[in-house]
Length: 261
Image: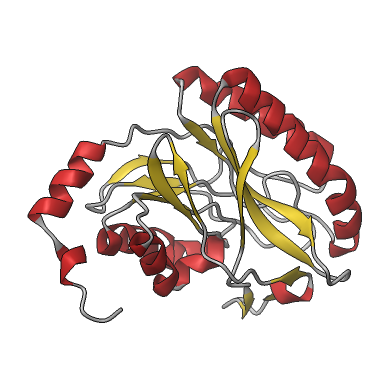
């Protein structure tokens, strides 16, 4: 997706894309980080109070109607710190009920090579807990965007039994060109998990920072099963073959050889 600063318009668009994705009869539909809004930080309080409940209600209704789970890449969630918010992934079960939430742990406080500084911690609080949940009987782990650079989180999710890890993201074009695919494939290979990484494209309407796009679904051997474009809004999908994962983990038992935990 390429989300802008009009939350209602973004929500309508994300629902339309999700309806298109449902034509493939998936077990789960995953959306990118910030899928329903990218705009000025002054609007965060209003967003959390109005747009977040609207998005949760709309996707809960769609989940019930379609009997399909949804991973809302990230929403703005209120915190006890009234000046800051959580950047939170929400898993909605096929029943329409919220199954779990993951609050982004690693916040993006960096200066990009082009000199643009981004300080996510000015507006967001860091989460503290790694989160997993069962989807159709198989355990999934959750991470968001900048978390990708911290392999210890993914190791923890693997040790918790994750067979797939979702990574909704809004990676910048500069860092994406250099590291996005390399890191996603590395996390998949070293943990022998499927990585599902829906991503933003387009340009942030306030900062002018371009997003990388290139949504990826990668198997536990590091093979790219599906790839999105750099600029188009679209549905990217793949079937995950659990048998391949089982055979790989038996024949190449690196996870049993871990000595430093």
